Structures are given as C-alpha cells and as structure tokens.
Image (tube, rainbow, N blue to C red; front, side, top):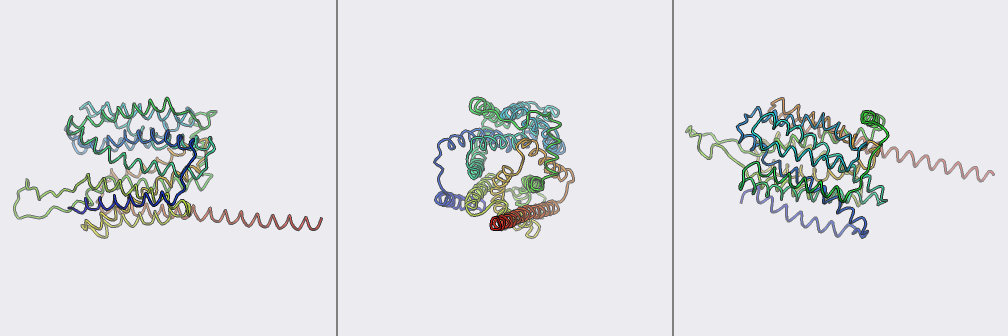
Length: 452
C-alpha cells in the first residue's frame, strides 16, 4: 500500500470520527423552516459545484487529444483566469441590480455553453469556451453566496446559523468533488474526453430548472446602474478597513490556493532516476503518482477543515482563529522548499494545507456576511477576485521555477496572516473602546441623576 492510499484511509477514519464528535458537541437545529431553506440552497449550490468539478479533470487531456501544443493549452488556461478577472467582474456585478437568482441562472447558461464548445477541435472556439467558463466562475463564487446571505437575513434566522450553512456547503462540496471525479472518469473511459462535459451540461441545466422553480429573487440596490454600483463597491472597500482586509486576505489566500492546484503534482512527483542506459521508453524513467488517491485525500482533508470550523465556532470567532490557520497554511507550503524531494513530509504538509482550505472557505463567507454591504455585495465580492486572478495569471506567464513559485505562495500567506491579525486587532480595539465609552457614559448619567 503506498503512502497516498494509506493516508486516504487514515483521513477517512479521522474525518468520520471528527464529524460525529462535532455533531455531539453542537446543538441540533430544530427549526423546520430553516432546515428547508438550507436544503433548498445546498441542492442548488452542490449541483452548481458538480457542474464545475465534472469539467476539471479532463480539460487538459481534451485539449491535448485535439493536438494542441503546450503553449496553446497554457494560453487557453490564462484566458480563463483573465476573463474571470475582467469580464466576470462586470457580469457578476449584474447580480446586485438585476437579481442574484437571475445571475445564478446565467451561470448555468454560460458554463453550459462553455461545455458545448468542447465538441469543436478549433482553437478559437475553445478560446470562446474558456472566456465563457471564466466569466461563469466569477458568478459561481459571488452570486450564490449573495443570494443566501440576503435570504437568510430577510427571513430572520439567527446569524450563527449562517456559518452552519457554509460549513455544510464545504462538506458537501468535497463529497461532490470526489463523486464528480469518479463519474467523469467513467464517462471519459466509456465515451471519450468530451463526455464529462456533456454530463456537466446536463447537471447545469437541471440546476437552472431547480433555481427557477424554488428560489425567490433578491437584489442589491436596483436604483443605480451597474457603473455606479461598481463605484459604490470601490468606495465601500476604500472607506471600510474590514472590507478591505477581507478582500486582501481572500485574494492572497485564493491566489496561493489556485497556484497550489497547478503545482502539487510536480512537487509530489519524485525526480526521474538516472540510468546509464538511454532507454527513454522505460517505465522507471518517468515516475508517476496516483493522482486520484491524492485528490481524494485532499478532499477528505477539506471535509476535516469544515468540521473543525463548525467546532471552533462554538468557542471563538473566525476573526480570531483564522490567524493561526493562515500562518499554518504558510508553513505547509514552505515544505517543498525546505524538504525538497521528501515525498512523505510534503504530502503530509499538503494535507494540512487542505485542512486550512476547508476552514478558510466557511470562515471567509461568514465574515463577508457580517461586513460586506448588502447593496453591493456581489459587486464587492467580484472586485475581490481581480487581484487573485491577476496573481495566478502573473505566475503562469513568468515560467518560474517551482521553488520560486512556492516562495511566492508562502509570502502571500504570511501577508494574509498579517491582514487577518490587523482585522482582529482593530475589531478588538473598537470593541474595547466601545466598552469604555459605555462605562463612562453610564457613570456620567449616574452622577447627573444623583445631582438632580
């Protein structure tokens, strides 16, 4: 049994034990209305994520099967991130004015159209598909959350329950990712590399139908145009340090995470052994790693992080516990630099990094629910994606050594830790200042009452 498969089994056992322990330590939600609301959101959200996960494993393989060169494939990937950074920001901003529900439907349509382009062995049609997919991705990571936060607050549910929904969403997303990988592989083996994209198209259309029949519409500020909404979003970021901090933390962490997705394979692949023979066809000359087992281990680690988030929320706040989480994430991505070639140490560190990812997503969503203004929520969230996509595109275009890339990621995560501490420290000072003010005000009122 290799270390990757053994690690997966150990993680599954630990994840199951932690899940049941977390359930025993957290109070069960008995509100039938909230449970129905949570199910309505999770079904749609997980279908939306399934449509995304089904496409991921075979994008590169499909392009290669069409005879695309490595350079052409790199250009297509950069185009996807670039469209998410530029076009996606504008389209995602439509959610606040024209409706978050409508924007989620638009996500299904755009991503579905991107799936259709995969049937054509033509660089420019595939480029169009990447542009549509990048735009859809911006909607996926803004409109769905914006709809949820608005509806949650509108219906008067306890604010603490919002973190509960986000935790379940991350947990379910990991299960969906593992399932989607298996399903995509089955259809690719049976019908070719384009088949997973057809399955994704079917899932996305199903998602659109459920949204149409089960979700009510909600908006930000409908009275202003999109350009003004974007101006207001910029002003909100500039005028509120909490929103600015969240944007910087998200961009730095997610930028590092996307780069990690591209670099974990070479980091875990041992160098080819040197032979006196020049038999290039030898199986030993090109070491491989079990990508499926590693990916499954990563997803279980994210589930563990989701359970830890839910447990920690009973005792503290994400503003506090995300400081050590971000610092630990930085340490884990330093291992390919400090322990280059040590497959076991790097693999364990990467699993810990994925636990941090599982804690980051619901934590960030919970904090955004508190501090991002409702009127321009989706617009602000899409602005956050500009620097993170820029980070990924910049690193992709530089053709840097792996060690340099991980050094950049460590620097980004350490900087994110600093901003998280700034956010926590500022809120703590503000709270303490408010306490002093209330105490002084109460004392003054008491003195005045005695004098009268």
